Every structure is written in structure tokens, then in C-alpha cells.
Image 1 (cartoon, rainbow, N blue to C red):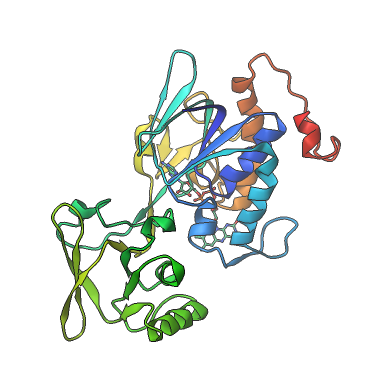
Image 2: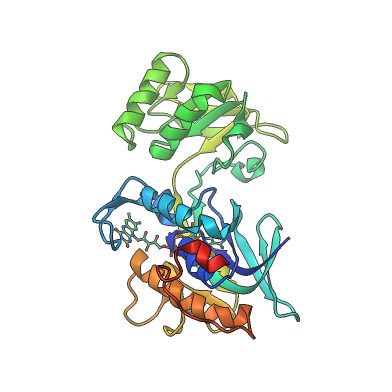
Length: 337
Ligand code: FAD
């Protein structure tokens, strides 16, 4: 269990920048995100899209912005718990919050910052009988650690960048067999990735089935065989894993049950410091709402600065805060001394 000053739920751009703002005031942070990588919408939905409204950057790719934020917060050594969803938040008599994730991990902190964006990105699941029986027993929706599939037979379904990129990566030097099944003839991914998949298929490194879909799963307690329906036949294929990559859709999820003031799936905050109705819990970025709210990264960055100065009083109730510019103190090391 980690005991820290601030637990940040959501490692999107606003959660990441909060580590910097909190770090300037000597507060330590631990981030938890359901996704296997940091960056929220920027990494998951549009990593290759340029953003034009980040001050100081006439244009920056969303993925590069996330990389820059990760570099910017490095000196503050934040902790990360990735691939786990925060299910429960409770407060003990010692005034520490305990946060419990979907995997039963528990972390404690004096302050909670909810930077959960549009909520948890949940996998879009195919409508197949007995799918739930094989979840975690041969069916995965997210690839957290590709080495899990080392030397395994894997079937991937989907026609977007995720399906293409993982098929290429796993086929190159990880899996013993990779099959890509897509229900249409054409793919939605980058042209370069489509070309690579076609080349790997021609070289016999990917079994490629287009105009096809997985229709049935079989196995005793673990997935053993999948049935692929192509245009003119049904194929019984032995496999260790099936990974349907049909995209993710955001859901507010468990946050709705934590007793927070909500309006239209967003958390109501006080714009003085982005505090919620529960003392010690703040909400910043896309997840909050107030009159005039703009769901922009820029707004979330501003909110994280005000939140951090207010959170200070929970972390250091006796402490005296002095505000100085980063430039005045000669860089981040100046703050840490
Ligand atoms: P998010 O980026 O949504 O991150 C929230 C994170 O919280 C997610 O990773 C999620 O997995 C996690 N999470 C949620 N609930 C839980 C839980 N219970 N447990 C664990 N983790 C949880 N904005 C701009 O300013 N400029 C642009 O040009 C721009 N272009 C955009 C283009 C597109 C296509 C889209 C979709 C959005 C665009 N936006 C743009 C909006 C911008 O991406 C969002 O404002 C920004 O991502 C919000 O950041 P955030 O940190 O609040 O949340």
C-alpha cells in the first residue's frame, strides 16, 4: 500500500500536470488510471492529432504533449498504478482517504484529486454468447503487457489503429501465431499500418481474414477454440487468446457512487479552488462542471494550479506556503531543497 500526499484518479493531461503544480509545493502524488498508459484522451483517442491551443506551442501532437508532461513531472517522482479502475473511496478516522481499485489495490492519501475526464474508457464488447465466461480466461480487451502473449497463439479482432498496431507488434517477434479478423474489407487505420499488415500477411506472419467475424468461443474452463465465420466457410481455430479491439467508450462508472455533487455526469466544483462538496476531494479537467466551463486542456491546467494551492492546507495543516515563480528559484531543484 502506498501512503502519499495526493492520489490523483486519472492520468490524463490534467492529472499529469497536477503532479507538477503539487510538486512545486513539496507535495508527493500517486496517479491511478484504468488505461495501461498515461495520457488519457490524448494517448487513447488522438495521439497523432496536432493540438493548436497549448500556450507556447503553435502546434503539438497530442502524444508529444503527453511525453513532454511526463518529462516535466519526472523530477517529482510520481507513482503510477495503471490498468486499474478506482472503485471505492473512503475516509478513516486519521483523516486519510483510502482508495480501492478493481484489483483490490489500496492506497492512502490526505487529498484526492479526481481528474477522470469523461470517465473510464470501457471496452466495446462484441455480442457473443458466453463471452463473460472467458473474460480473463483467454479473452482480453486491453493489452497491458505484450509479453503476456509471448509464444502464444493470438487472434485479434478489429479494423482500427489499435488492432493493426498490435497485430504488427505481436507478429514480429512475440507470438507463435497471430490472426487478424476484420468484418469489413477495408481498415480504418493509418495507411502505413495497413501496408505493414498486408506485407506480414503475404509473408505468412499474420493470418488475415477480412469480411469475417468471430462468432463463437469454445473451451472447458479456458478459451481453446474460436469459430471464425468468413464469406463462405466457418473455421475452427485453436487459440490461446482472443483480443477484440473494438474501441473504448467512456463511462462515469463508480465515481457516481461516492457521494459527490453531480450535474449531467460531471462533478460540481467551487471555482475558487475546484473543491467538491467533500472536504479534501477536488475535481479538475473534463470531469468537473461550473458555469462557463470549457472542456479544454488549458482549463484543466489552470484548475490544477488553484487546486494544488488549496490542497496544501490538507497536506500541511500547520505549514506556511510561500508562492514563488519557478524562474525565481532557479528551476525545479530549487523547490525541492
Ligand atoms: P482525460 O484525458 O479524459 O483523462 C482521464 C483519465 O481518467 C482517463 O485516462 C481514464 O481512464 C481515467 N479514469 C476515469 N475514471 C477512472 C477511474 N474510476 N479509475 C481510474 N482511472 C479513471 N482539448 C484541447 O484543449 N485542444 C484540442 O485541440 C483538443 N482536441 C481534441 C480532439 C479530440 C478528438 C478529443 C476527443 C478531445 C480533444 N480535446 C482537446 C479535449 C481534451 O482531450 C480533454 O479536454 C482532455 O483530455 C481532458 O483531460 P483530463 O485529464 O481531464 O481527462
